[in-house]
Image: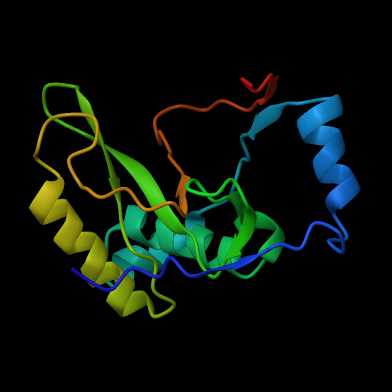
Length: 165
């Protein structure tokens, strides 16, 4: 298994430029949201077919790369200390669907090199992809982001929902 980058930098709340926004959206108007975006994947799909690689791996890699390039997307409340931190990298957590229509949640260590990421993805699918249960791959990393796609479903939404205290 590859070494998992879980390094983070603590956020100094007194000097953090986003402090007031964080307070507003966690204390005054606590909420979360989901966003569904319609993307034209024609070129990416063609590239994955030409290079004989799984499209889902390409998709996971590209989204991970974009998120990792923006520190604002890597802010997480560190589970052990409740301290806000910025992780160096986020790793994709995704769903696999089994032949009996049950699902399992897997994750793959992000690597900036696509070939390395792709091999990690294939290894995870081979090792954990057929294991039933909600989370066959442990341990769960604290710096995962949830991502999914249902290519047979065409749906666009923005759904705010209240966060539980």
